[in-house]
Length: 611
Image (cartoon, rainbow, N blue to C red; front, top):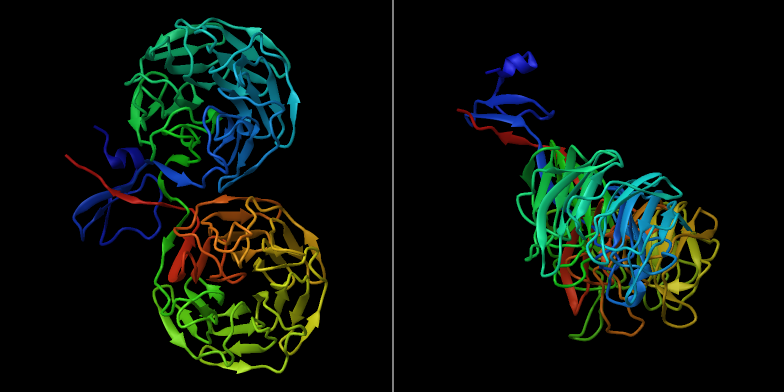
């Protein structure tokens, strides 16, 4: 038997501790633990950001970081038209299908994809093939017959579709980007299975062979002319999804019944059980879904239409999904307070408590080191709905309810009242530093913008849409304003504006309009918006929804643990991958802190068995 030295040309290292830098294939003996360890391949599904609208029986095409999900069955008939795009972090709306479809399949990439066939509500069968360029849909060559619940794989100019309904068919057709050509028939007619590969090297897994339920485990391989039998999958399924190539494929989900979470890899001959989906489901997006080592599972049916997204990775790196988690509570529950600083060096100040013993404006200041909150010197003037910026040891507070125009700066111990007051006293959204701050909007829906230079405030270009209670992120010369209450009445805003140090310009639209000082973090081209109130009616729900901004558009991110508004947040000092929100209002004032961490990946060491 070959030794490690034979294979690698090196002996196994004896080390007192695991190496600080891990490289795939490394093997060593840890003399402290008495174990042989190495960096080995890990296969796992990790949660991604949820879709905007949960649905099943839709078409998918693309990769793990650039996927389109088209059509499908959702909570209402209009969802048959919906298209969403995934960028590896979250979902955003794409151009709607020209006509609503479900039981539709896809192939290709997000910028060169095809959605073919499907059921046309309520009971028709579509023969259309729509081509997508990442922005617009155009008519492609019509499929030879109305079809749904097919097997599909390939590219926009070399695609394959097999099987399907009505009935249970065995036909195969290939697509060259403009027209369809008949290929060899499946050996077993079936519907609603999955395929992977190309027009000359495809593989078809499982499916339904007839009613009640007629489920099969059959595998067939295609060589460009004919299908031949392969080894059967370990379990019979229909409604599964697959991706990859004929010799490196991944099948996941499905139903026997019951609904399954199983994943299997296929090497062209044999199946190997892989990591299960986190949530069992079937009829997820079907089509081209990345590769066998970097796949994506989106939507599906779990007893209801699902918005769940999961990412599959098989590599030496362990992936930790982006998520919100509970942090340490602030000492005093309150809301409409300000905040600044990073996730491990934060500051929260001001706010008010309610209802007992009535509305009480607070001057309280607390600092956070990532582990616990500590009370610091109070503001000189108690106030709420104020703006803030800077760091935990060099902060600035300005404006607030009353209305208030005062400016104070913090040195890490105490606050000092500055002579430069806001030109217009008001409740305000703020960001920046104590020598370059930005104040904009107000609860009376003004578009006023002011800049601070460390000494005095100067009026600058107004917001294009007057609003109060908006979120903010970025800096004085590259700021963001999003959401809030629009003028002239309390109407939720979903628009974003970008500031260049002089004037505001329109940016991308939030997926969900919201108000009441929703949380913000990051920079103008990589920001996070979270929480806020999703109704113009007082007392209505506070949302957990989180969205990320790339400088052009917003897309979904993992939701907060608890929906709340009017929290202290890091604004431009926290980042879009390490954000925080402290205190605020949920169903009542709260002292809870939540922390957001973006997706991470790192090589991990595993103990190896020896004999």
